[in-house]
Length: 232
Image (cartoon, rainbow, N blue to C red; front, side, top):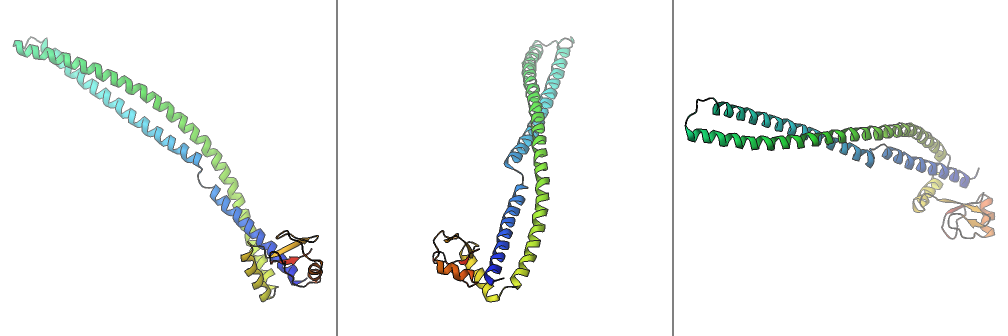
């Protein structure tokens, strides 16, 4: 096995490691909550808050109305008790009862509005909760699948790294250093295959003499891209 062939095998391993590492990053990113899930959670949280607010308003309106009714009832009892004989005091009581009546009507309207709004808020909370449950179930199923792939990728990368160490040890340190330096300059591809008379690294034509030398096991460089030629 020639050094160029060994370098090409090392490059194949490096390429596979890069691809699996890139996919592993995608898998890890895919396990983060999606925009759809975050929006569904926000909607559900908003719905809960709205329902709680309207429950509080309904309670307050009801308490207010009950308090006004008690106050009006007490005023009516005093008005018709016969104990109040002063005309001015009677007139004041009458005006108070009328004012309380108007306030009770207003409180009743506000209570009704709160009850209607609460029903709408409860309906929205139910819809938002059901929507969230559906989206979360789909997301959890996706994450479970991705975790399986994550474990498979991690194991594959570990095995590939072990294989690379063995491959690298079998290569002359100077050749390995040249390969690694060239790979950094050439986007990870230091070795270019040759198809026919074409360098697949840059798509330029390689001379027949260079192809012959490369097939003889010599280290030959493409005149177009500078990569080491691998004519197999």
